Length: 134
Image 1: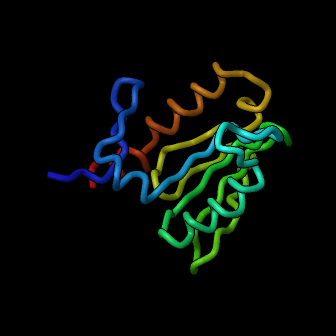
Image 2 (image 1 turned 135 degrees about the vertical axis):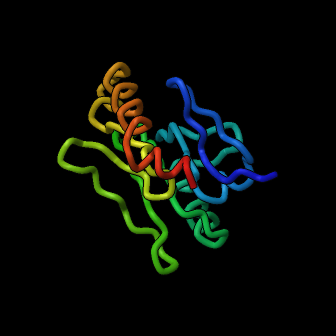
């Protein structure tokens, strides 16, 4: 009884079957210029980790690089990660989880209300409904 999708109902989201979800989307945040407890830096996370995710077939990789005040979302295509550009509204849209939308401008400026509005709009979108129906 394995479900391989993000379930979003009533404004909240929960992951079912973590192992399957983690094979599809990796999120690293925040990545700053300082070293973490393990002694690794943001450069390590953005290069070696990204390579490990690629080798393991993780479809999308999102990194919030706080030291550079930016978000980067990559999609694995033909064995290499290619950056997903925000659309005209500043939204990054997952191709693995249709309806997972992230307002980069709002997140980077600390406007959590707008971030939540864009997430809700994505979860209420026709493409998300179709994704849940699969």
